[in-house]
Length: 408
Ligand SMILES: Cc1cc2nc3c(=O)[nH]c(=O)nc-3n(C[C@H](O)[C@H](O)[C@H](O)COP(=O)(O)O)c2cc1C
Image 1 (cartoon, rainbow, N blue to C red):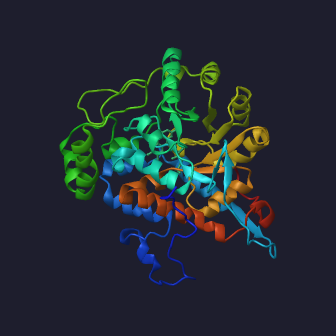
Image 2: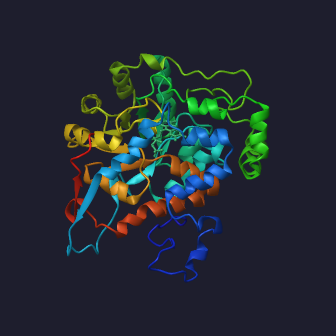
Image 3: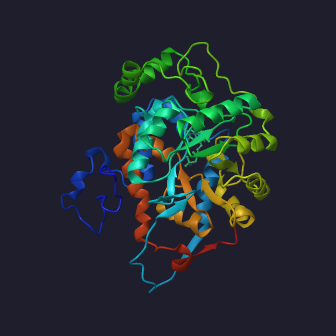
């Protein structure tokens, strides 16, 4: 494609390539952004507090949110030398497509509230960079539009517990043209996100003086995202939870319909498999037996995930859960992972532990919010930078050692 994006040529600031003028090709507001964490700092300023809290928060004490990150601290590289890294590549074959990097964009609900046309921005950026992107079922832009923007995007469903609604939703996803369906399995009930309540966030958002104040004190977001959306596209609604349109994002009295999600069991997964002809991935796996059972029922992939620490506080760090899942199904199923990945180095650790690909959530959301498509491409380039550090196969280039002292 003519508008494809090559992160290999992207002029990220580097201490070995001092500013030669190429960095001016990077939009000015992105030049100080050298790590994904820098996007969080920028987004904290850019976004109204309730929206930033919704994206950044975990649930209850944020124990799992912290654990996901701390797990990386427990691994050390023991590098090997003189092993010719000149032909290194980070391409990856994933469920029938060769992507340019082993990381992609995790599904995130209501991304079009933080970034103007957020799901489309993510879809475009992912297509240009040739990285995987999973669109959320809790989104405010119709799935048909997102698929048109990126035919390789995957669709994530929060399937309702009622069989007839499941079959109808799958029919729509299929008709839209998606090739990969991701079923999120770790949300039978909503997480206890008291941080959202404290910050004044809810879905739908309730109109209030506090919300209005947040809008007028974040003018770039107000004009560039909220009012621009209202003027050009009207009030956003949940478009993809069902076959028909759901609740609006702003309402003083409407309640969202989550369906009977708490009824979901393995028979529902079988029903989904019987009705979905494409690739099937189960997201939210932590136990090897659940991975095994998902594969037995015909899933081609599993994503080891605790929902970024947003569902059940105290669940295990995903990195610690990964090796057992790989042992259980790695030979016959594609094992992927998310939760706290912020550096290319983190991606390499998961790769060394047997994950085929990694998904990243919050940072891509922040990147889209503060700088749209160019922000997401900048984030992709930052994550890809570790390609310079360790060669093509981490298994041959360096060994990973887990420090024995800490408990999993
Ligand atoms: C703002 C936000 C919205 C999310 N919405 C969804 C969703 O709609 N469906 C889903 O399966 N996971 C959702 N997740 C979880 C992510 O897909 C992913 O598991 C998690 O964010 C990964 O952790 P990270 O943000 O630390 O990278 C959401 C996460 C965030 C931060």
